[in-house]
Structure formats: C-alpha cells, structure tokens
Length: 100
Image (cartoon, rainbow, N blue to C red):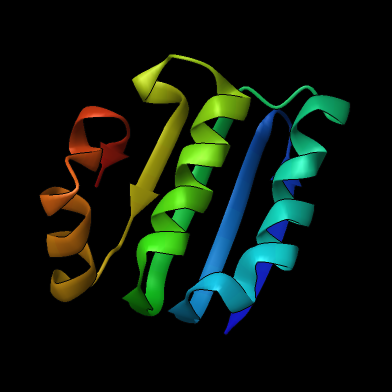
C-alpha cells in the first residue's frame, strides 16, 4: 500500500497503489489535510495501481467528499481497474464522485 500526492495550482492528485484499506488511513488523511491550506478546488484520485478497496477505503473517500463539499465534479476517481470500479459502482459512488 502506498499513498502519494501532489499539488498543481488548485488541483490535488492522490495516487493509491496496492491495497486501499485501513492501513492507508494515515497517509490518505495527510494528503487530504492539505486541501484547506492550499485552497484546493479539485481532487483527482488516481487508482491505476489500486488492486483492492474495502469499506474503510470507501469511508476515506467519503471523508474526502465531506472536506470538498457537495460538488460531484470536484472529485474524480480515475483509472480504476474493473474489479475496483465494480465495488465503487455497487456502493453508488458514481452519484457522489466523477468516475472516469
């Protein structure tokens, strides 16, 4: 599991590798804590190398949603593998986030 992030202007990009589960909580929290101090208005979560998500990962994404506000377009979950995207769709995250 690895969480890395970078900021470009007002956009935060978070890359998640391996298993996205409770073990990623601290690193994910640190990444999203930079939102308010850097005036971030959009977040991209790149799941290209994410192999697995569990309920704690879904909770972390909801925590991100709470921090960013109500705009569905403010957060994009991109490049999810089919098995990860299926979990996001079953959880109806397509209604809360942009799934690309």
